[in-house]
Image 1 (cartoon, rainbow, N blue to C red):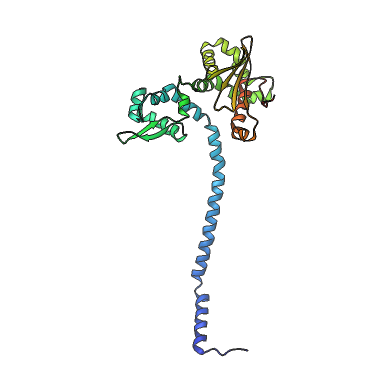
Image 2 (cartoon, helix red, strand yellow):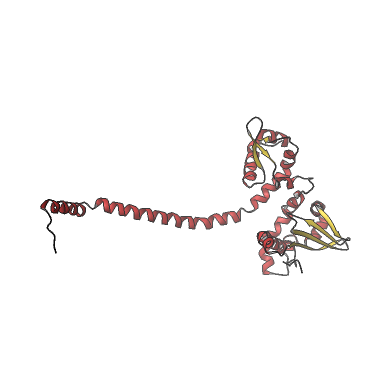
Length: 279
């Protein structure tokens, strides 16, 4: 049954309908705007996905930066200066103590603070100052738990060169990368290079703890769950390996470090390989 509709109501409906079909601009523009916004978001997400791999490659290429800057901090004695200070040191105080350029030191400290190696804290005068962290205390040259010698040893030119020959190690498995770079294995090279030999001795003395009679020296490094072991045979070091706990939680936490150490064994030794604690 069709209901009677008054003339005025019919006119209103017709006008409303006519307005919607005669002036579709708002509707179309609104739809296009929403579509454009969605397309913009998709485009931005796509661009970010394309850029991230490039950022990751840059991080790989510049991976040496961190160890180089930490080495610089040790050589300058930044951790030692802060340890001997009674409170936060301003940039001017620290640069004066170290005898270096304030602008250059600022850039070094900015990087190290960003990495969490040092921290910032206001001085008594209200200016920005620098203080130690648990990490930076490991960089004190003569500290009880110092790892400074280890950093200097592994970042020395002699130890960096084998990384340039890692592909030679893979292509010719019998030729260690260190030997490809220097013409002799690591300990033979140290015997002919007094400075490098001293650096190696300092590294092995870094937090050393004797665990078995005259044969094995255990260097506790980074944490108790990881041990750096040097096995001696008549005064000659024959094995250098990192032993990481087999507990699943510990293994997961140290996975990256374990993989890096495996690569280090490829770079520095001919027969070094990953082993379990039981092995």
